[in-house]
Image (cartoon, rainbow, N blue to C red; front, side, top):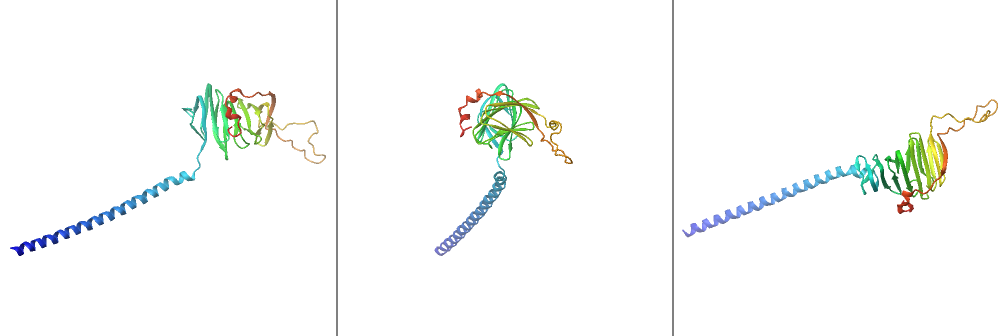
Length: 260
């Protein structure tokens, strides 16, 4: 009987060791499978993140400016608020008594009441197209900003701090003022300078006929074709000396070359 008990104990002990060994092997296999599964999941996550992030890293941001002042104004169809980001293609507008100011890199744009403009970009230069009302812009250099009105492009003429104002009278007529520094106005290849303190009423007339001089003027001599006069893309009339824009003067930062 004692021998039987010993045999049973030996058999039982052997079975227990076999069972424990199997459990250890099963646990090892399970852990190895889990590690492989986790590694595959991490690899898939990394590849997915790379595919998602790649176009974001490759494409430049279309953000052009930030709203720094807004009163009864809209960006698109939403009410404008300080800190809102302005993107290329965004339409900015103000109510009759509203005002909106946007900082775009080394420039600022101020829309007066009942005005509208669409932000865009000329190469690396922030720009806007004024479709109605009055816009005043401040720049720290000649490449800081450009304002479009129909076929005309108004921009600073030098790297000196510049303040200009443009008012749209109708689709073919505008008033351009320079209150600080000089401005450049261009319609295709017709480029002219507006000196500091001057204001001009500009009539856009791209289809105007070539200006005619006195009889015989422009002839190149006998047997030669006449010399073609340069075509004027617009007509302008001086309207007097400008004063400093009052609303602009309220914003001290506009007077700083470092913070236009």
